[in-house]
Length: 381
Image (tube, rainbow, N blue to C red; front, side, top):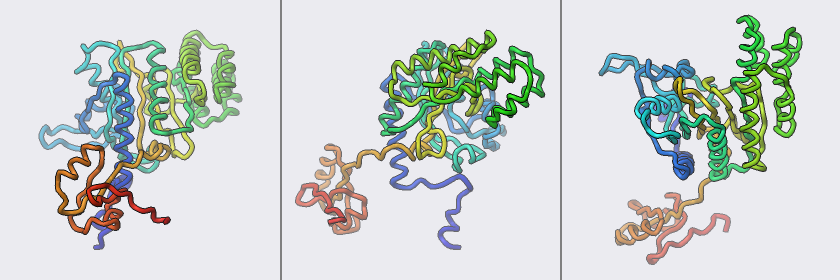
């Protein structure tokens, strides 16, 4: 058996090594710091919960992605979380039910999913997010969207597009016309496949309206007017108007951000109950963030965003290089301690002579010479 055989890992799972692990940790800290600067307080839900709790309510949408195992202590089935948002919703509606509203919470942690396809081949990824709970107005929607834009800028993501969606719009249209299950299924399949001709070939007001909604998708400069002009049943019109309200507020406060609108898209876990959105960037295999409004109880909704580092790190800029100096063995320990207090990463060379070559092997940018950090000469010189 060779060394590779000994470290064989299950499909979709991988070791994260330097410098990638450092990049992920830095991105996670950066996002949480941005959230906290806006008053979002950290929570840390457990990795495991009882299966019936984890997949209840909001978590039901992710039940098919949940790993399950038996708890030897309680003899009950446990689930490994596939999404942290339902856990935060549980905390808000139970442990923090009496806390003042609006409630602002943020988190960072790993999730594990049965299927890798949704994560571009990875089943364990880091999820970082913020949830604004108990504020039903459009101001909350816009706060999270602006927070997302600020976070992306802080991470150095220069080019991205926010795709606004209205997951409740299609169901509202269907409910208004009391469509049978067979026709609903046919219409949803056509929308899923973006098959405009299939919609146009079906008779009735509902297929016609859904075809018009599907055709309204695109950059907001064109799609906003098309969506506004469509005649809709009262309930569907209210859903559309809320989306356009959020869009108008966002455009006023985030000029220059590329925005698209897709009135018939419903991506994600399927638990959204209002405006939804996803963020795309060139070079990422999938959306780098997504979120929207969802219901956590009969009385309360929330609006949140989730980032996933497996996609985000493909487009985020590298963090500024840390000042890292190699300290020769035998140097006064106070010298290294003083460097660390001054912001340096000070690495003591325990095995070598503390020279430039040893510094390169230790991935240091400097080597300590005569008590002073000296930058390493470029390899191109």
